[in-house]
Amino acid sequence: SITHKDKGTLVAEYVEDHKLNKTFKRICDSFKDYYNQPVDDEAFEERYKRERVLQLKESEDFENLLEKVTDYELELLDYADRLLS
Image (cartoon, rainbow, N blue to C red; front, top):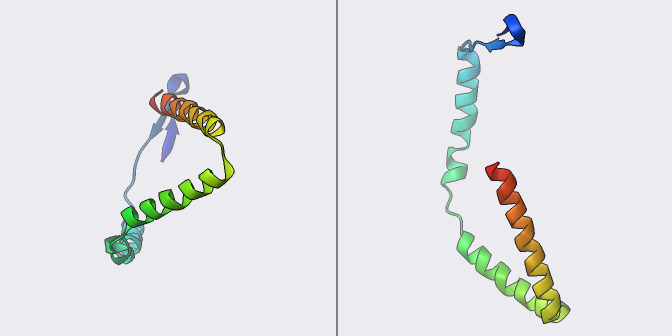
């Protein structure tokens, strides 16, 4: 429940809901097998890199790639800065 105190302060109080807890546990338990399945991420990443390099070699020149790399670096720096702020 949420109540209002003096000077605009809100106070939140957690009240345990046993029925909701059981439902949530049942849902989480139903995903156990899904998350325990082995994932071949490394093979996917290597295949993606190989195919993407071939695509870029066909469609881009070196100068254009350098421009894109620096744009992506700046974008990643911006994301990191916002994440850490």
